[in-house]
Image 1 (cartoon, helix red, strand yellow):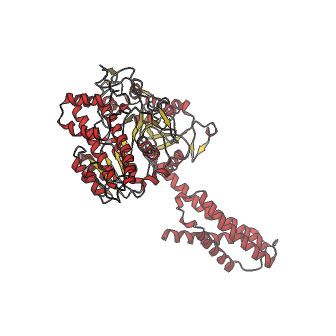
Image 2 (cartoon, rainbow, N blue to C red):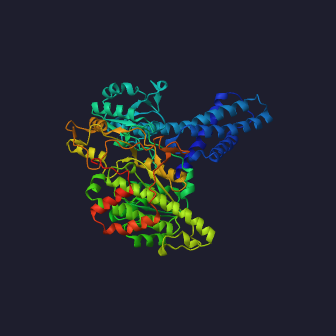
Image 3 (cartoon, rainbow, N blue to C red):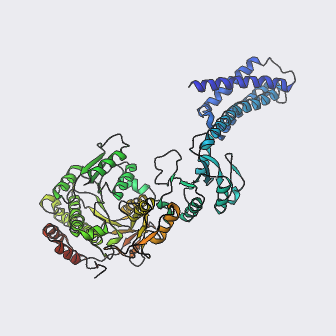
Length: 627
């Protein structure tokens, strides 16, 4: 407030002085002594500037907004003065000329003060940056300009020397005082000429091919590479920041974004339960759900450490949990506990992400995959149906398509279970409507529901491929091997995989859930396949220090050379979203609710061999590589 008052007084004095300067410049006699009119006119100018919120602008941030607001304030006042003085003394009089000269000089004085302060701040900022790492910014657009502006004020951690940009129209131009030095094609020359320490990529939508090219040139010149966080990473941030290049930046395509309105309609004001909340997918589901105005988010996981850490992150480390973010430590194989959780919190929507997913380990311990993925999922589905949950969204996998491993086969069983629960609920809803008995929709005595809760639970599954950077996946392992100077272990030179970044996979899961109508298996377009050997070589080129090489170790137990293409037009149906499809799946006619109930009751007492045999019968398309 004190600064604003001082500025207003400074402007008042400046305008007053400019009036006397104008008096001498006009050089002719006017009809009055200018002292009192000039004082009143100066005060009115300042009052009008204040009315236009002119004094809310920080002086060091002075820009075109300051000029625009000053122009409006001076323009309106000056026109009014001209009409008044012109009416009394004539529009061609010396008095009117004096008004015009006073207004022009006052405008220059008021805006000039602010420009001088800003220039002084920028000069100080640039002098402070002399000892910082020398940087070139790739991209002179909105983000790059923001970084240049921060650097000029001494609020950026780099000494910016200029830009490179691929737009021909910008070549040789000056952007915020920094020159555009060239394009990506002559980046090598720019880095060598200016002795650059860091190259910053400041383009929000840039092709991975350009990132790879910039990364290679930077590595060749021993220059660090930084990048502006993606749209997903930057949520909730108001500042411009940079991070190290990550392997997800080299995915081979731009990240997918989706429309948010259907998601607000689906989630706002709802209670949502997430199983497997502590895992890579589950935690991202929880993170993204926080932006949609939930009534309550229930986090369920068997790992108390991950659950606790997730709660802290979701609540900005201010609390360990709250009434709106509730952690539940629970094993989904515990049917009684699961049912109690559903009874207590009555979720409207469930995201079922809890599962064993590690392919080779589940080949070693098939009983764990079968009991957790199948029996645990049955417990979740049954409790959701019994307590009137609106919708259950099951996180599935591309490995459920023509499975060659235990994990994929168990996930195919889970898909069939979800479809049957949905179909059974629809049938029983019809029977209940005919008989007037709401209990008909329940699954056994413990599943009886009240008339208020009698509603069909919709079940849908969403399949997608590998998520880049998830816990236990190969790509973080590659970076660990590179840092340790060890060979990168690739299972086969020709192995390919489809990849998605975790945030985009989760956002597409949400959108798929809004499109599903119950009983479907939705599949996501994973883009083009990635050849793992070539990708590993790119990582070595960019992140390696000369010690790393690639070592072929052979396919692991249960591993395929090629994953199935999910969005194949021959076995999918398009939806209104071009990245989401409905899968055409084969159904096991014997797979009904009675069969499921009997199977789940028998599984815990079976031997490992009996469990695998039952899994083969349930999923006839399950074929091991050595079959």
